[in-house]
Image (tube, rainbow, N blue to C red; front, side, top):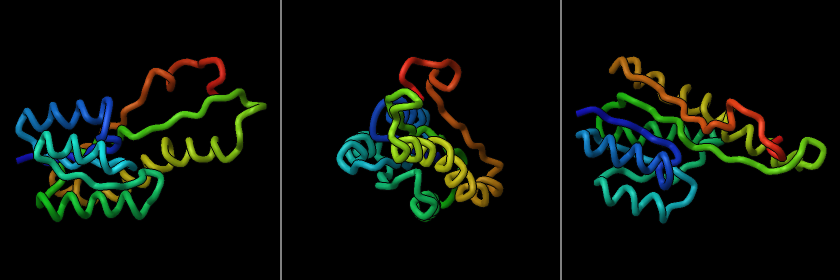
Amino acid sequence: MAVALITGGGSGIGAATARRLSNDGWSVAITGRRADPLKVVADAIDGLAIQADQSSADDCARAVAETVAQFGRLDAVVANAGIEAMGSVDELDVEAWRTVMSVNVDGVMFLARAAIPALRSTKGSITVVSSVAALTAGRHYA
């Protein structure tokens, strides 16, 4: 049975992806920063909920390790977690900017780095999800 790890799995696209893969017969682990939504989704799909912050290299490594420990392998990673901060370049708080970059950019690298050894053995893959905001500028999205 194929195994997927999905970040940001407690709601939105991450939860929908988890439900779809589960319906297609995959074993699914989901991560997110808030435990309650994760538990609801994981219980609905008989999956594994891992409270973790994608901006933490240690949390990414722990999520991969827990997934492999639970299911014995890893075939796919869906790097779906992402956040935004509103504000123009001259107004946006520097810490808010750093938090966005930490989750949306650094976190993808941390997750990939942690997952690649397990994915090599299964010839698995990593999918990085983005909103349309990655392709077009928007007012007050620094």
